[in-house]
Each structure stands twice: as C-alpha cells, then as structure tokens.
Image 1 (cartoon, helix red, strand yellow):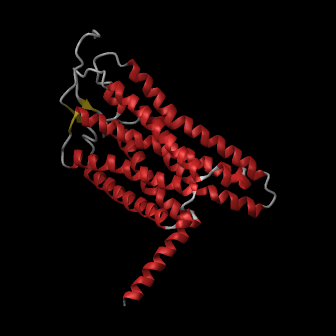
Image 2: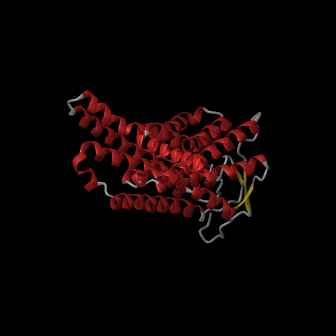
Image 3: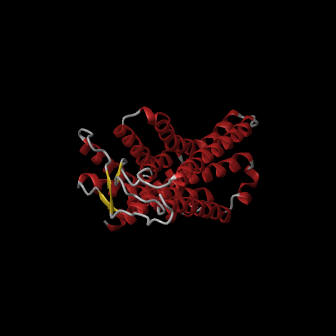
Length: 315
C-alpha cells in the first residue's frame, strides 16, 4: 500500500470467539465461576496483607501486587467475554478493541514479571539468608515492582501503537475470544512486518526471558540447598519456595503446552485452551498461598478468631 494513502480504521471489529462449539454456554458459566473465585480469593489475600502488620514484608508486597494484577486481569477479560458471547455483543469499536488488548496483555505481562520478582526474593532468601533484609528491603521491592510495571506498560504500548498504523480494508472478524494481537494485525491489508517482529519480541520478553531467569534462579537455589548439611534444614528451606514453584507451574505450563501443540489443534480447542490459561492461574494463586504459606494461614486464623470474639462480645 502507498505510504501516502489514508489509514483505514473500521468502525468496529467482530470477535468470532467460540462460534460452532457445542454446549458452549456451560463453558461461559464455568469462566464466570472462575472469575468470581478469583476476585473473592485475591480480595481476601490483599485484605489480609493490608490488615496484618506481620505480612507487610517485601515478599508479601510482591504477593499483594500479584493478587492485584490477577483481579485486574480477570476483570479486564472475563466480564467482557461473558458479555460478548453470552449476550451476543460481538461487535467492539476500534478504540475499545485496542484498549481491551492493551489491558489484557498488560496483566499477562505483569503476572509473568511478578513471578520473576518472587523468584528473586526466594533466591536471595536461600542463598544470602544473613543479608536478605539488607538486599531485599521494602524500598528494593517497591522499586522492582515499579520497574516491572514500567516495562510492561512500555512493551504493550509499543505493540498497540504499531496496530494504529495498519489499514483494515478486508475482514473485520477476529478469530479469537478477545482482541488478540496476532489475529488482529493479520487482518490488515498493508505491510504488517513490524507487527510480526513485535509478535516475536513479546513472547520472548514476557514468557521465555522471565522463565529462563526463574529456572536459573532455582538452579542456584538447588546448589545452595545442596550445601546445607542437615536434611531437615534443607527441607525447611525448600518449603519456603514451594508456593512460588506451584505458581510458576500453573502460569507457564498451560501456556507452553498450548503454544507447543497449537498448530495441530482445532481452532476452537486452541481458543478454549488459551482462555483457560488466562483465567485458571488467577483463581488458583490465592489458594496456593493460603494452603502453602504458614504466614497466610496464621493471618487467617487471627481474622477468624477476631470475628468469633466480636460475635461473642455482641451477644
């Protein structure tokens, strides 16, 4: 297309989503249940961290940020999916589509980067236990989280910004369950090679690079644990990492499995797997921290004890 030609921006896009999938209404209901679980559970975790002074530590600042990102991510995705397909509002305006994409990928990016921050916290705690409070202070943790937000915002602004130079003069039907970057830019009828490049940069920066850092950090943790002479002390140190390891598995495994077999999967099956990879981690992350972390358990017990005492006092 001639560079002097006007960019064609459609009035709206149509999100095709799960068209043709049998009994799909049950799946929409399942997504809604996961969303409610995510909001309630992450809300409880955030409330506990805010109310309990013992949880105002660098580690739980990162946990609070992850819970916040999970709530925002679920709220950016699921209600719109529910409205789009359950109530058949499949049309979305051009500007709303780009905004929708930005917030969805922003939260996915932040979830991945937040796991990196938590792995750094565990790495320092295991390998430099005597210097942990000096290295990982509240100021350091806030700085790391702020840096993650800045990186996530810049990367996704670039991705969305590149979409604004595209002309959509053919189809406006997006073959995904939301305004997905790949299916969206491939609808363009002018040169979208820059978008192809950013579609490679995005997975590397938000999936592969963070995952590589996490794997290297656990190799270092494993080496440090091997130097601990007592088996009981080694197990105690490892247990402090168990919740984070489960978070990493729940976040990365569905994404990696889906992308590795995506080309062989039917379109609707791939879309369902991708949507599950987006909504399951926010619903399970709080349960993992409640079940695996002693500090959260103690905080919950304190809350229930206060509630019980207040009821007795009222009577």
